[in-house]
Image (cartoon, rainbow, N blue to C red; front, side, top):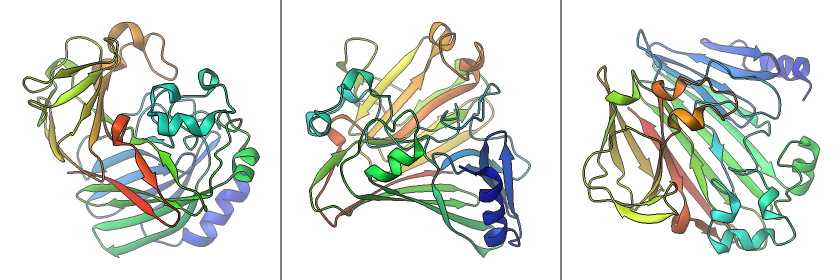
Length: 319
């Protein structure tokens, strides 16, 4: 990506809009949005929301202080988009993995193809003084993936697909990922809005709404277990909740954050704890204490199958 040319183009299209700024962090370009009630930042790489703040309140999203802001390296924090698979490809449903028989599954990067591809900003609108709407898109085909020449580019996505991402910034943050099959063949995918939330301390965190919900424990041979009560943390957690509730609440000593999901029946809850934090890229050893991931997803058997012409939307609202 030619950074100077990209910034110039964005300024020409959106530079006169009140509350909109075009920002550059080292090698990455972002859209900054401020209205009467909130502010946010969205990077073109991966259409990744990195920041959401209500006016005069602490950040809701976590972003590591060790982010590199380099092309081809997704940021550690905010809301990365995982698509067309979540996690390790080999752990996905066979309907997804069978689409990659010509590739070495073990060498394919986690979390899909689109986190390190630059998306297009289609529009920025301010329907009212307290709401700003940013829409981005990505048209996926072999040529586009090859031209981006990133870590995922060696994996060919063999279907014509359009991804649209609508971000509404106001008292609430609403992010909607819509996947449209523009090919002449059916395809399957899994996905996640891999949301990192900022908390005062992980020891104080309670996530309510999952009582009596079945989950898969990725740290215990992928066994199915049942959540007995609210979720609390005293060790590493990596779980995929099946038939997850649409509404949950994240609480620490300072606030309650309500999360609502639509078009999703699975939710991932993750905190790397002490040992894994020391192995993670773009992540300080102590930052596990100030974050938790709660990810609106279409994972495991909750994967999506789209026939030609069909579309599916997955939505997260943070209130």
